[in-house]
Length: 49
Figure 1 (cartoon, rainbow, N blue to C red):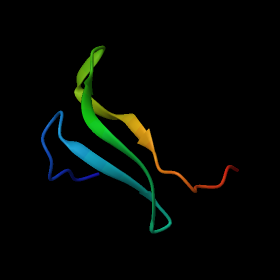
Figure 2 (cartoon, rainbow, N blue to C red):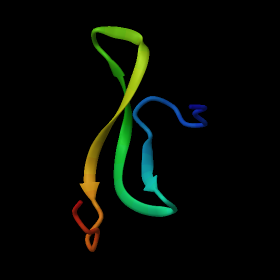
Figure 3 (tube, rainbow, N blue to C red):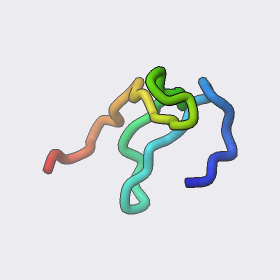
C-alpha cells in the first residue's frame, strides 16, 4: 500500500468506494517498519455485516 500521508495525519477508510471510517496513521511499537490505522470515528449510516 502506497501512502501519501505522514504518521499521525488523518485518513479516510474506504471500502468498495464507500467511506466507512476515519482514522490516523500509526507505527506499530513492536515493529517500526510496519504501520496501522487507528480508527477515530465510524461514519454513521454504515450497515453491519
